[in-house]
Length: 214
Ligand code: AMP
Image (tube, rainbow, N blue to C red):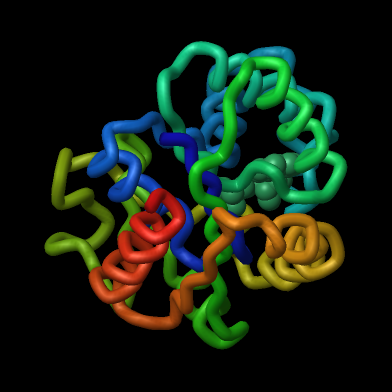
């Protein structure tokens, strides 16, 4: 199966995408994670992407399209999270899938209120070692600053600081929301209300995947 999850920052694409990809046995291709890894490794792509990411702006299309194609070519079955983020990227994805003889089996839009997004983003903590996500208030680690799963150090993403969050939500509204009209007429399109607790949202996602697939 090939799936696409899209929606605003903080809606839970990463948390849900990771779980869903594991359950379906497909690769979780999270654009933000791929970019952060490139930055960490100091690759050419990472060097180019760094400043855009810290400012909460989109990295140039050409760079992200190249990175994602590289991944898609090397997996069998994927869940895209955080790509595409604007219409030109969606067009590039369609062209790429055509070339590779692949198609999307489900396209899911996740949405939540701005209040929910702000609360989730500003309290988010991530493990430096395994990438697992926690929240200061909603799902705190057992020991402050330490990952429950691997003992790694928890940190707040540079772009989860309040002054950057507002800009990321603006970028989302201006550049990513047009994807709704780009995708919403397709038979495999579905929408999930992601305001609830993680397990509740996950159940809704599974339903939509089943419907799209059936
Ligand atoms: P995320 O982890 O999905 O919140 O992404 C973190 C940052 O990576 C974003 O704020 C952008 O700077 C960059 N990024 C992630 N996905 C894309 C994309 N599809 N196009 C351009 N930039 C992206």
